[in-house]
Image 1 (cartoon, rainbow, N blue to C red):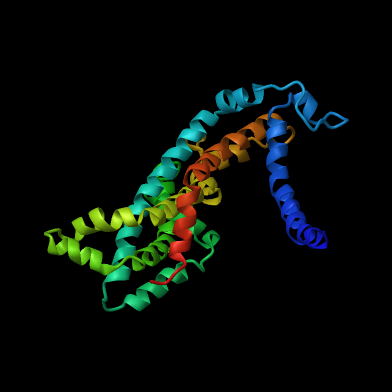
Image 2: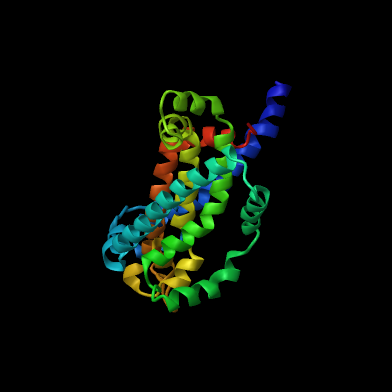
Length: 276
């Protein structure tokens, strides 16, 4: 009995406290999104929506324009994922398999880019895109997000490729495959957990990014979800129900993504953490 109590006090109680601390904001956001606006600030506080309404979701999706924001975020995030995934696989493969002059310096340069605060580059990037006439353009966000995500994911992918034996490629090339064909037919399937991990990191980073989107986009029909949530906060009034509904809409794709790829992501993170 003493061992059980000790285990509960040292393991289950801290885990339960951490879980409640993490999940309580999400629970309250969902509850608020399902309440009528008049009941949100009403005392005594209702800890469960009664009556339940979906008007806040309808208002956020149709009236505020979250249908457009959701589409923009999806376009930007998926485009960023495709660009970063292709380039990081090729870069990671080259860093893992080839020896070339300046390789150490190149790796050091990739690592150093992670030490630069993104806020330092806001003004230079804004001036560049303004000169090119690309402000309030989703392409400017795709270029920016891809540029910032590529160095980290290339290093990550290099670790994944290093864990795959070179003999598999050599056997494929002996059978008549070119190196590129061997990569796609042999390495690519084995690299699937790493690809999933890279995809998730890239997608979430692009989906949640706020600062560059706020600086580069000033037309409402090009807003992404984080910017749309920001502009729902009025100076004198705020529709808390619609804001909470918009937050739930923003969370859903990430939650669904994690639900489907959790197993592969854990495998990918574990594989990338081991030196081959």
